[in-house]
Length: 178
Image 1 (tube, rainbow, N blue to C red):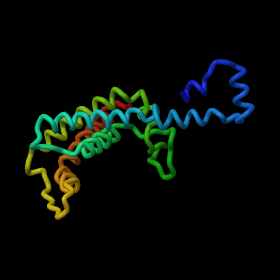
Image 2 (cartoon, helix red, strand yellow; image 1 turned 90 degrees about the vertical axis):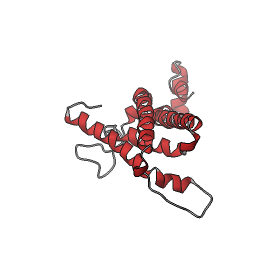
Image 3 (tube, helix red, strand yellow; image 1 turned 45 degrees about the vertical axis):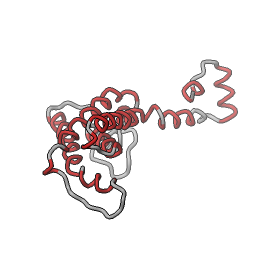
Image 4 (tube, rainbow, N blue to C red; image 1 turned 30 degrees about the vertical axis):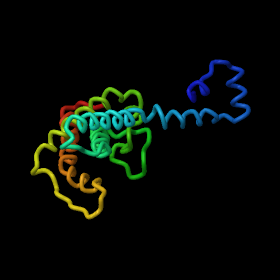
């Protein structure tokens, strides 16, 4: 809807909007786009990894994992594989400009890659969880199991993220960029 409001093809409409709201009237639609379609690959990563986790939990209830933990690992894996962007720069960013999230790959252009990362990180994370030696036992007196699950999955989650950070390092060393 925001894109339609911004780019409605009647010249009189465009003139009216510019006269009524000022020359920067299109910024509102841009803000809406950045918060929705401009962030779609991250939203899809969370959704796919969450659904994948629910599927695994239904198939194997003995190895149940909180879907939020799987989604966090998937998003961290996705961000590890992205080249720092130059559009949204921050003070003290990495050398060569940039250092912030790449806006083009966060949106609809990154959907395929986000889907691949969400599925692959879910599979790799589950594979690391099979090894009992990688789990950290944490006992809590409270009835909430989220903290004990988070500690239990800490090392498998870190190893999963390291796999994707290593993948990015290898592709960067081979000269393959985003």
